[in-house]
Image (cartoon, rainbow, N blue to C red; front, top):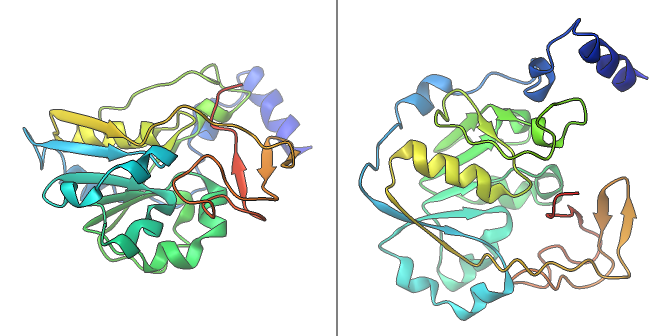
Length: 227
């Protein structure tokens, strides 16, 4: 009922849709702290890591002297001695299913949307940013339309994959060479998966990531492909 009322008010232009793309009731971001990071790595190169099966074919030790962006359950690679420079999480299912591991995973820089402030107890090296969720909102004129923010201190745009967040961060931080690895573009939804209102619950091993437990049995996830 509330959702329909909000949508009606937006359509009638009683309320601007932007108030709900980046909900005004979310906690405040670390705007000042993030603004000080602008161009901190100007002229450097970085590697943004996807979590596809091909990541198992890459010797991550070769990246030990590189600036790297890791996401979500990349902490499963920690037993191989790898830890990224930057760590980000966007998806609510990833946060809810891995809260303890995420809190225990310390990297040099950690970036989270403000909506997860209550979930993140470990605030060491942590930055909370405003995440614009318009990509997912049916009321937004930008639904399923990727956008790119040049000012991470102001906001970062969702875009179906957390990699979109990292690309915007890398630009803001000043990196001029950006490489992507582990981005396989070969997602499948197993026939046994339970799908309810866009939410997928696994009932077996995950075939889409470098570790079968990544979105293994009992874990929830979203289809990474736009509808």
